[in-house]
Amino acid sequence: MKGTVLSVFLIAVSVAAMSAFAQKSPPAAAVEDRDWWKHAVFYEIYPRSFADSNGDGVGDLNGITSKLDYLKDLGVDAIWITPCFPSPQVDFGYDVSDYENIDPMYGTLADFDELAREAKKRNIRIILDFVVNHTSDQHPWFLDSKSSRTSAHRDWYIWRDGKGRQPPNNWVSIFGGSAWKFDPTTNQYYYHYFYAQQPDLNWRNPAVKDAMFDVTRFWYKRGVSGFRLDAVDTLFEDPNLTDNPILRPGKNAFGDPIEQDKFNTKLPEVHQVLRGLRKIADGYDAVLIGETWTADVAELNQYYGKGNNELQLPMDFLFTMVNKLSPAEFRKQIAEVNAASGWPTFVISNHDIVRSYDRYGDGQHNDQIAKLMAALYLTLRGTPIMYYGEEIGMKTTPPTRKEDVKDPIGRTGWPKEKGRDGERTPMQWDDSANAGFTTGKPWLPVPPTYETHNVAAESKDPDSVLEFYKRVLRLRRTNPALLYGNYTPINEDNPNVLSYLRLYRNHGVVVALNMAKTRQKISLELQPHGFISAKKLISTGGSAAHGGEVSLPPYGVFIGELGK
Image (cartoon, rainbow, N blue to C red; front, side):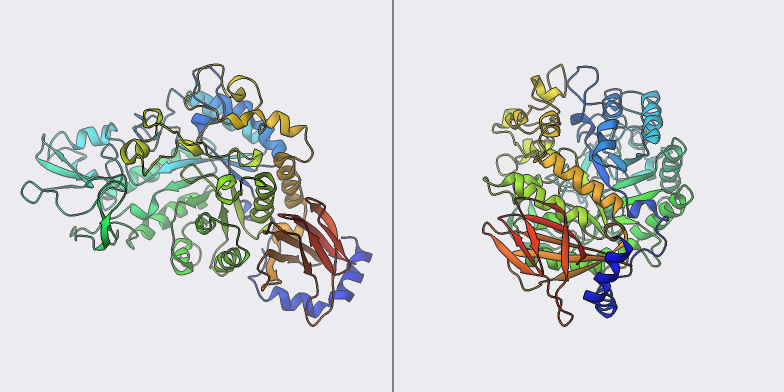
């Protein structure tokens, strides 16, 4: 705002009102230029599906490099690349056989270095996905470990005798069946929380910690700006192998008892590892993002650590648990995250979760709702993590036949479990063959929606989901209130409209989101200080402010600058 307008604004609302609202939420950043990750926009890339440069049907690093200008224009500050290390691809890269190289299907270390150089030219940082809980069963460490009970790497994994001909305890794999695999070579079982081809590392062994910490140093020296830490909850297990309690009668989708993972997840030793990783990261001005499935703020705070010495950005998946447009539910989740001891992180989709376009869409207004959700998580106090294709309204397209399923979850759990192929389909660049993703046969089918929802078409349509994302991201980058401001909810009793203020020094922004299929109005009367007014910055569907009132069409968005 200009100085004269601000003066009028402060008279209308009063300094006392601003102070009163500011006190409801944690203070804004004290030093704006520090902690780059607080005000960055992250963008998750599933490399198999983003851009294929050589026509083999699988995306690769050179494909990502070719799209950096698109990402820069979109408004992305950092890209998170899911695992691109050598792997047998049992779990599409989350089974790593070499932490310090690139899988040939994605390219070479030289290709990675080129990607890093080109990204740096555009002020885009690179975040790698670090699989810390387990390796592939083809990793040299595990091949040596299973060779004999006296091998150098035997204690790098978790080996135990069985109970007679049964596994050591009742723990089950998250992907179905016992979490123990018998190995006849040494006549013992090894533990795997995920697939049998993903044996868990023994983090109680200092040699494992040292080796994994060195992996981070290797990539930091190649220009990486941080890591997303996969499955951090599962790093440690009860050394006594206590049986897990049964939560309730019945079986899960894989036919296993429904257990509470009490003795093999979220053990306190996890935080010792996170503090060690953070100490190294701080030396490189790097960020650590955690795959942290937390039940409440108390659990979330544990991952920030005392004095914020663990994860800078433990992922908050609470939004992904809200599968309907509910202002009350979103208010609750936002309030909980803002009450945490660290900087908020917001995610509405990723490679393991049904896309937001489907979770929130009603089948008739999906594009409007996609814009509404973009306005929500890109204007909140915190760091957003986008998922590729979210910005063009890509939808989940699951396979309809078991024989078409690529994801092991779907193959094992079909038909109750369809797998995660549907949210991993190729990026839709244009309306040419295979959506411009590849000149070959894509590893997953391109959804039919590519004809209408693609980058080329939406770049020409000022009313598209993509152009809306660009406008909001440009505003976020340039508006001090959205970068640094507090979050203050307003109209908290409204069952249909989620609205809030972002206030920072002499700047103020109001965000109003109509989550109903009928037209709504909200008041900008801030008791007892009277009405404030708002000048439109971004809106959809003709949303407008008149005096102290905002009118919103169905699923309408209004983002306005406070003033008079």
